[in-house]
Length: 559
Ligand SMILES: O=C(O)[C@H](O)COP(=O)(O)O
Ligand SMILES: [Mn+2]
Ligand SMILES: [Mn+2]
Image (cartoon, rainbow, N blue to C red; front, side, top):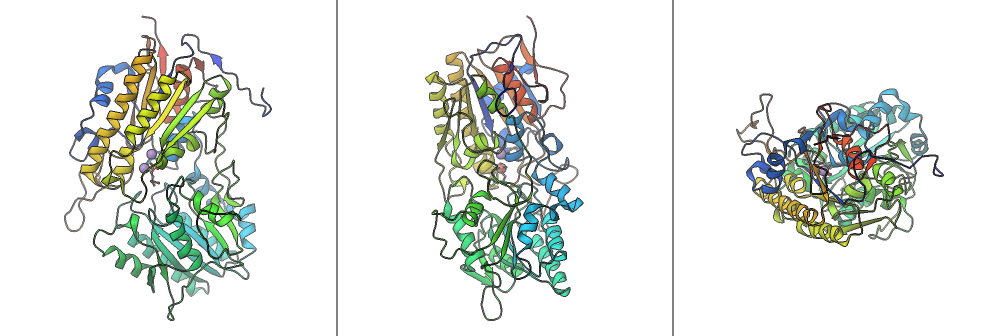
């Protein structure tokens, strides 16, 4: 037993040896769907992934990557990187932020918690500000939760409410921001009729305002700070609906990248800057794209950009975004307690790990993989390498991204002989898929396939084992579909491009010269999902997973 009371020792696998190097490759946003012109993966030349699928039927299968299989509220919830990598790394299914917030709002427990009581102190004399992504995407936030929270706060004494709305178009259709803003605006005007001074105060596109991640581009967070806190932005409007409609009318504008705007009153004054004595809630439940803003709100000695004015506020996150950093200190709903992850177990059992991606996905194979935990379990046993991403571009202009560089780092790590697990995330199919640019996404898929090839060739050279899988679908379906599965047309008869993830399952292939010939997929785990992968990987390192882990996908037959 360790000091935490957890017994970290894993049992030896009865048949599988230890000490083999295992390459764990996660293709981000790479699902399996039928062949058609909107399936960028099947359109692209992907000989490596094709050969895995066609070469060894006992060692290629699909696993579920959405809905309840990854702890989301319903089967209509598409998968995403957070819940996908959590499941891959933790080997169990945890009720995720979306679900925990639903439960807390439904039961009203959210209003009894420490976080709400803390911000409530400001309701008497200050304004309550709510900042976050306004859509029903369910990846980072959900508008129905925002409306419930506004209602609940107003019933509990909030007299002045300002919402700072980030438009989506990435987890939902581009253009849908107009309807979401309208819904919120209508609801706030109903509240005004009841005597609550509630309105939208600022906004901007999620990829350009506030929601950067992994410190790729602090300017994004600064633009949000300027609009939300200082009340300053290049565009000023009388209403948020007018703002999104007008800004969207610009050529090439889209919801993801709308410029920042503030709402002003008759005299041209911003209606909702954040000032001393106010309360602030960031209502995203997902951490990665809110943690930078949380630092700007919470840290006294913050130096990433000049905040100009730092109001004395009571700040709470919808969730605590980083348990290790205790950030933020106050939060409305407790995050899932994702403990005893496979990474922590393997570290305790002598498995040395190398993990790598480029900036935009770096936290996926480290922070998310390790159950939303920053840093190393044991810096002697692990090395995490971040390849700097390009910033300030949409990745359709650079669809190859850093796939080659990531593969080279993995190759060098494998050849160094220092590591037993070499884990990477290849971002291309996801990041380019989110731009909705089909031609570029095809290039992205090819680039990812080439990177896989380089890593598999290296595994071949050292006699190792590979696992190639994905965290959820994206590039395999780039069009919104009607109930019959046909491309859905908009009112002008044009197909609607799908920038979001999908509900599709993802492939998982295992192989390599280090894998015993008798290893194959079991037939009795037909509904296996991403959470089954951790036990599988533990087996490939020569161990049996803890009893409460989702079962392994493999068996070893004598032949
Ligand atoms: O944050 C994003 O980019 C999207 O909302 C979800 O993509 P990811 O889950 O693949 O990161
Ligand atoms: Mn992803
Ligand atoms: Mn994505």
